[in-house]
Length: 430
Image 1: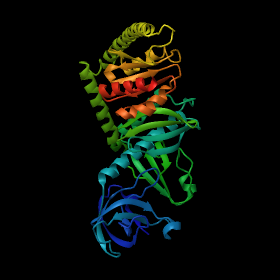
Image 2: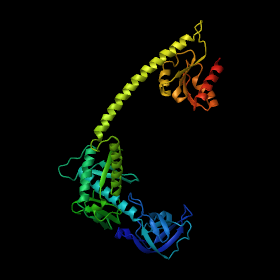
Image 3: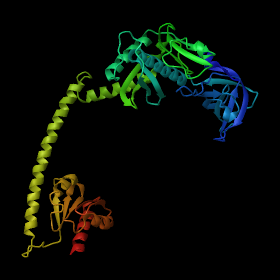
Image 4: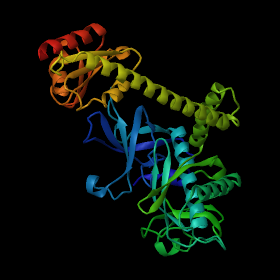
């Protein structure tokens, strides 16, 4: 049985231990599974990732509790996965200096304790039961189900958790942090004794129970079963910040962060906001008004551009119609089976808008050439099939594109290839 030092003192960072067993990993020949007579490495569990660090010269990359079906233990052992790349494997019976990655541990402690505080506040304020917890790389989430009556006097249970309610809970959670309430862990051998605590959530197991209590056990800010690691006082959490609230499977998913990660997120977003404000020659406070004013100008400019392009397309259509009429033979049939019409000032997308007026409504192949994009919009009445022409011939001149029978795009890297493609189609259709 491993003595679990992390249950005695979460602030132990270095210690000496005897290696009690060593075996090769079944998953990776460069890894070994090591057990110790005592360990401060917290194994993954309770929504919290494991500690990492070192055992002697070997890097600890994973820590798990023993599994009876896998290794014959009853869960009392702690299994440390170490990387032995380029080294001899540890020796059973030898002693080793052990060290945890304290930055990772304290980060987990801050985040996990922040989750406890926030969950306790949602329970007190809304009667919200935490039915899911995830510690992700970029944020944490809790899934709150509105099931119980709030413990706050004269506070009705809300129909939903709005962002306003969430921010109210955020403030109250930070007030617990600022009050630096004590964080205590009470351990019980049986369920009956543990249930005498003012728990916000029913117990799920019957023995070896750890209850984490924040504040006074008589009137706690939170009291719930948990096997994770937490700081000795709420003040060490530093900061709790909610990002957003979403509906999720009949519950409310709260996205948030705590501790140094919340501060880092604030620093990152403040830097972005400051840069944006400076680019608009405004203060952070004035930036929203400056941005709205700029958006109004942009909307007006887009509207003006839309009408200008529409007028230009109308003008180009009139010119194209005149060309089409001038190339009609005496019998009323097209003098040429295809026509290249150059658009000096319209983009390929604008050419497509222009082409809509001729799709399925012309008796020849029209190639609208968007000069600035060195590309064509092909349009016809359905014969010849525009998409088939592009698919069959554009690649001859390093072109690409595609489309339907009545319209297609043919995109080229340069004007020479584009004109060679148009010339090929003209000869093909004669």
